[in-house]
Amino acid sequence: MSEERAKKSIFKVILEASALGINFVLCVIIGVVLGYLIDKFLSTFPVFSLIFLLAGFVAGIREIQRFVRKVNREDGQGSNQETE
Image (cartoon, rainbow, N blue to C red; front, top):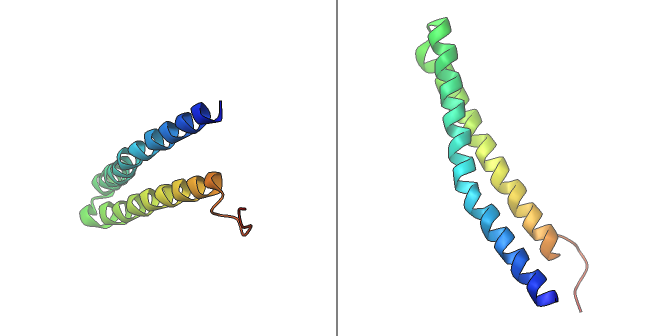
């Protein structure tokens, strides 16, 4: 029983990890598109595109950090208690 549960857990982590790359790219693309649209509306081309590119990059990095913390917490590595 616990072996099947461990396999499901591993597959779940692999599935979530494979989605991280897509999530990161989407954050950057959405940031660039929003920045471009604002620049087009205000006629200030590179300003908001660069700002939102950076914001998208930061959002992507935060998603990766959140995933790593979640995996560490599930594995018990995030706690100060030693396993016996």
